[in-house]
Image (cartoon, rainbow, N blue to C red):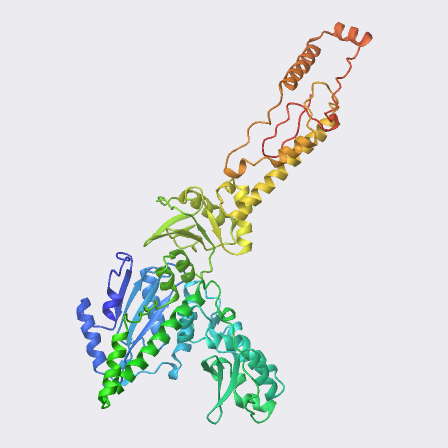
Length: 601
């Protein structure tokens, strides 16, 4: 264990795996000497099979403790467990997304020659209390499902833990959680908590309880004198490990003496689809492959057992001849089914689907992410008020060294830790646009994706978002904006008295419809700098109108008075049955993006 703790490199993590190491209550000076001293102290506990405890303290992804903080954390943790004076070796590792500290501590007391018992056997409760003290001391962020909190300097149960305790709820055990990660299916304990507990607590009689459970593919069976096991398929779990209120003694107080399930009540088969965990792609296919392999092994084992019995029994000549003919008649041996990968993650890698495997590993990631196809090597630099700080292969961004992490550059993705701060989202989008060569994909909750889209549009980063829903939304909003601008400018021109002029390039409903159907150049990041092309007649008419107005500006007072006394006859308007002059505006109208006001002379 000590060799594992102090190993500097492991696989591809060389150089960043061992971030810090330390020891307590040991006399040796070198690593090998301390390892030998720990082994000698462990061997002194002749009556204990496992005198060394292995504890693991893990920080959140956005928290990067210093070496001094790690030393103080280990001291506080062991002190609360009552092991402050025991020999221990610890090491801080950074080879995963979460920085974590391994602690190997010897519980054998050399003075009393006895093993130290932690919290009268409730060592996990003591560990949760120690974690609450550490989080409160350093001001780190507590877990969402924390068991203890610090109030006025006292350790008390959190509101959530107190509520679950009152309801008799039991936490999912470690073995069940490991099985869920390995197979992609809900454990029996989780299924019983989600489906069996409400049925058992709401049943008004034992027959009703059995019938409703059988309809869900579950059973409630008695074991021994007072034990109860809940069966789901071929797997079982103790009722006391699911909820303390569904044991036989507790339910007998409401329903009377226990009555077993009637044989006429048939247990329905459960569909595999209803037990698949979220994001567990191909879990059913992987289970079928494992079941096929186990069935083949069982069949071959039975054949080997029959062959062994046949060889040990004395055979006559006829039986020997029959066995020889049977062996010769088999031209080819039966194909051997290959052993499947050990877990669902390995199965995805076995199918060359690394992206799905990575998503399955990060299914519990609470932080929204920004990703891209071809990440570039970007030198860490200050982005606004956020300063980069290297931590192994990652770069965290914060306002200063001791401030909370805002977002983390993990190489292939950017995790936004403080997803409720607009400044953090904008800065992360700026980094992602540069890192992923202007093609950014946003992953997270609906609220975060909506906020990221709005902020990207406001800060000129919308063109870098390549998610299909974002692209379609930008195109629709761009079309609506262009159509609205064209309509408002047409109305402005009509109100200014320019409607019906011969030289005015009118746009009818067909033109507006054509404008609405044109693809938006803003989606691809380009700017629309010019208005739609107009015909030569409109250009000539517009030039004549401008020359006429310019001549009016250059007239003297006498000339203007003469024009007012003897106005020139108005020219007859050109007939154009194909034009609708009520929806026109002047040639100076600009159709570029953005809110502008139409002008007319």
